[in-house]
Length: 438
Image 1 (cartoon, rainbow, N blue to C red):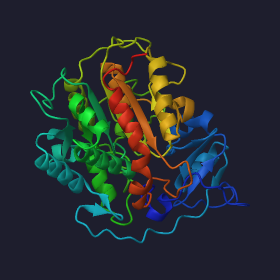
Image 2: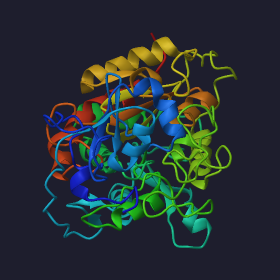
Image 3: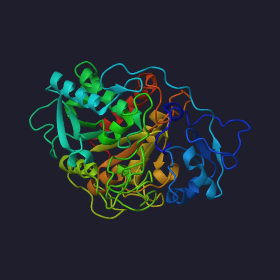
Image 4: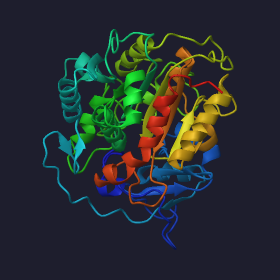
C-alpha cells in the first residue's frame, strides 16, 4: 500500500475523537497505515518532521500534531510518541449513482465544470465562465483539464472581463489540495447560493449588485481526477499530477501547489524531496496551475503593495481572497512562512480573521501560531504580490459531528459544512470593498 492510498473509511475518521483507552504507543507496535495518529508535543518540531518526509495533516491540538500510520516510523525516529485516534470509521455505504459524482455524491472535475456551464447558461445576466489556463497533464498532451473559474455578479458594462478596476472582487478557491474534498462542495454550493438568491435574498442581491464574486471550485483538477478515480474508495492525492520529478506511487507523486507559490518559496514547511507531500517543486511558480492562477489574480487586482514583509498595502485597497483547505477548523492569514514575522496590515488582517473565526467557531492566527509554519502558499502570494487581504479557511469539524477528516460522509456537506461556512463567506464578500478599513 502506498502512502496516499488507503480506505475511505480510515480517512473519514474524525481526527478530534478521543484516543483509545489503553492503546499502545505506535512506537511499540506496528502502526496501521489506514489510521490517523496523534503525535504528542510535535508542533515545535514540525520543521524536523517535514524534513523527514512526514505528511503532517492540517490539524493541531495544543502542541500535538496528526499524521497517518505510514509516517509513524519516521515520527518514532525523532523520539516522539504517536497514539492511534480510535478505530477507523465504518465504510461509507451510499454509492454514487449520479453522473459526475463519486463517494456518495462528491463531484468529479467533469461534474464541477458541467455545473459552471449550466449556471452560466441559465443565468447569462449573472454568471460568466472563464478558462484561465491548462493543467499540467493537459500541457503535456496526456489528457488533463482546462483550468476554469466562474464570475458571479449582476453583469453590466465591463463586469467579469478579467480586468482590474470596476466592482470590488471577492475570490473563493477550493481543492488546491485535491484530497480535501469538502472544499469543492462548499464552493459548488456558494455558486448556487448566489444565483438562486439574486432578487429574493436581500443580502445576496446587494452583493451581486455591488461586487464581483469569482469562484474556482477545483484549483487542482488533475489531482481531483486521481482522487475520484478511486470511486467509493478515493485516493488521497494532495499534489498535482506532475510526474516529471519521479514516480512516487499512487497518491504521492506531484508538486504541492500550496508550497510552490513565489512568496517566501523554500522557507519553512517545505521539502525538496519529490515524494514528500510538501514537495515545493524545482522553482517558485514552476507549476502551470499556479502560474495560470496568479496571472488571473494579477488581471483582477492591481498591485497595491511595495516589497518588504512589513510594508503595508494602502488602507483603500479593495479585494478579498479566501482559499479553502481541510480540516483544521481554523482561519489563517499571512505570513505563513514565519509566525514571528507580521505583515504591515497585521492589525486589520488579524481583526477580520478573528471576526470570521467567531462566526465559524474556529481559532484564527498566522499558520505558525495555530498550526505550523508553511511557506509558498496561495494566500501569501496574493497578499505579497498584490496587497489584497487573503485568508485560508481550514474547513473542519470541531464539534464532534462525525464530519472530520479528508473524506467525510457526503451528507455532511448539506447538513453541516455549507450552513456553517455560509455566514463567513457572506461576511468576507461584503468586506471586499474595504478590507483594511478600521
